[in-house]
Length: 600
Image (cartoon, rainbow, N blue to C red; front, side, top):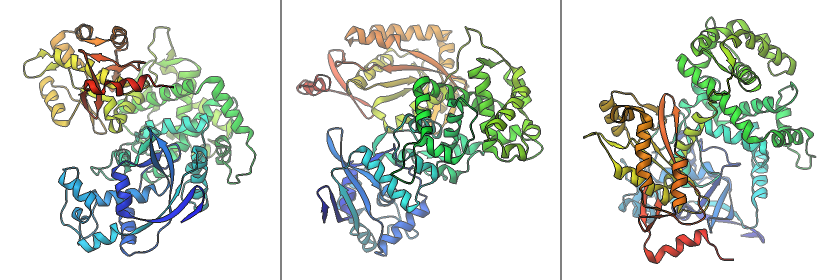
């Protein structure tokens, strides 16, 4: 039924929308969409509603152009779509069994092709047919643009109170401040992706309280949850983003302001009344970001965050157990804000660095018992009172900091940046590749062919398009078995982050090449002789090879440099498909060139 020139409402069978799903036509915009967070119980309850043929709310989609094709951007209904598709694909069961893949042609085809695997026991066929024949109420808009889509999302959810206050603030806002909050929050949570991605990829970065194989991110492993600053349920409500927003506001603001929910609303330009005038606070914080630059603010935030996280790792204690000894501590969120701003004052504003981390940890141990009374913490978000508490903490720990010398390395944001690259590889397999090392474990010989293949991989990534960049990282194992072989060979433990096992290059470099410098020189010599054209591309790769420390493991990073022309390897063109370098046949060279040289 068409109710306007750009909006239609119709019933669509589940099996029809599943076809759109497997053709990757359903798109998620993470600038405003909430995280994929429904529990198994919530999904099962929704499937039960379908099986009983009870009515459900409208799904709202917008037709948009994405990567030269028409997609359906999900404005409302992402959680429900995921509940349906993950049930069909046997990612979870109902009480009596799993969906029978044979009842629908698309799922049967994917079963036969090995894409899906039938789990047992199977549900009754008639029950499954009832699910796939359910008519979903779907509204499609063909004329909505980006801002209107986001405003529609906000209005739908604010009217129904489906979102938390922080999610309502963020929905439909495009300013520098909310964008910075969102980027930092996803980096810390590790549910990282591009702003736009197909729904098929969302499960890889979805958040769960249970360690289930098809979920990409465990809430129990998140910094905020591990350190009892935010509960798992409140991660779902984006309380972590609210914490980051308050910290950024405190960093940016010239004065010691009162931190209130109403003020945060104004920083986001959020007002339930769509006719309300823009707040002066919004203009002030956007102007401050423009003056200082959001990039510098981000680096400063990451630097302070990483410093605190690394101290907690060294202390081998969670946040409350380090700061509180006599009591369990209370208002941990406020305590974290105070400590963060204390470190910000010392590290960023006073340009100091930690002189003795062990002594600092000892000084912080039990500090909360003395400095953070309940009465004080009630005042922690009031301007002058907060400043007084911060000054007291500075007095307690500043002896363990010293003036930074000009030659001191600045440990800015590598920890978060590296984790971002790792997590991006989950949804961007064609732009990121990992190697455990460049030496064959069985014979201890340098593998020049593998290093040459790194050069080929970089060329294949760059050939994806003029703005495409990517990485090959040496020092990360592809799988648990390889990591365990590395551990047995070098007698060195690897560091586990999510599903990634970081082995580092030092054991290999020291055992077979005597030093990391000699190891790197050997690799560069091989890259220099790699058959890459043009020569300037090869030179840029060589000049952009860097090594970084990540939790005591040194990793080597090769960057695929964005280029304005195709890159040749050994007289051929390659392009990246998933984790493979595919040779482009001569008759298809024009397709590669068209990515770089588009006709007017």
